[in-house]
Image (cartoon, rainbow, N blue to C red):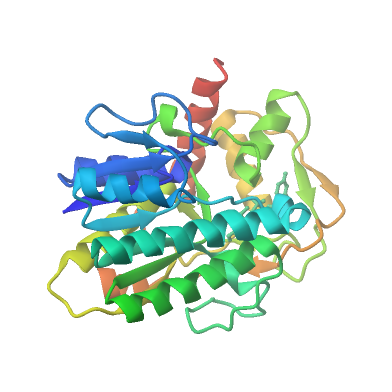
Length: 323
Ligand SMILES: O=c1ccn([C@@H]2O[C@H](COP(=O)(O)OP(=O)(O)O[C@H]3O[C@H](CO)[C@@H](O)[C@H](O)[C@H]3O)[C@@H](O)[C@H]2O)c(=O)[nH]1
């Protein structure tokens, strides 16, 4: 097998590329380097700079590298930006996927892992979100992930491609400091950012109908997430008939914003009291995965807990900021 990993120089993609390469598979990365950090990819993984919107380039990569499977992560992923620039999100996330699927079909490739998101569910009022929980995305980002899944399944059926769609919950942590997320778009880096500026962490709403009034999420270590991709790729490499799987990737355990901030205080040694601000529009009170289907279908379960996520993310934060 040779796996093409699109977006393989980004935060999650580089973890997937390293894990897949480390497991002895041949890997080639395609990345437009819009969110890449130098040094994330180890020696031995070829990097092609370019976009999944470039059909000619894709054709060349498939032929030159003898690609036999694809893990597609390249996409825009910021919720707020997707609300401001929906056309760009549809063009890049759906257009890029359509171009890629054409190339996959033309090259006769039969295996595809697609990076989806818990954002496909919107804000369901359930204790545990299963893959059968109705999808009702509440922003263009989530819409492009849901429409992407539809497109993946339809193209899979039409062209005999076996597919796995992985719906990531809240990804955090790093397998090594240099692989850490450098963006400040999610709660863990946002709290680090506040502490580094000598400011109190913020809680966006403490009046939710949850045990401590703050939002509950299912945090998953990026190293575990990378293992889930590898397990999906392996599953697709079996001599099984073409089919499609859609799987949550989470731990199945809820952690509140307040609990997470307390843990960050313990890891960083900066235990200052958070300030409570207004609710952030669009936030669901609770989003926790049922992780059972991934366990049954892939034999995969998350192993690392939230303390490991916070500690490894903090090491990465210090590494990237020279602290
Ligand atoms: O300084 C902060 C930052 C965040 N939050 C809260 O922390 C929770 C988690 O926020 P965040 O890390 O921004 O993640 P989500 O809003 O849950 O969304 C993430 O997780 C989704 C999947 O579950 C993905 O679809 C999104 O792209 C990804 O940003 C939310 O309740 C926020 O209101 C705070 O209280 N204070």
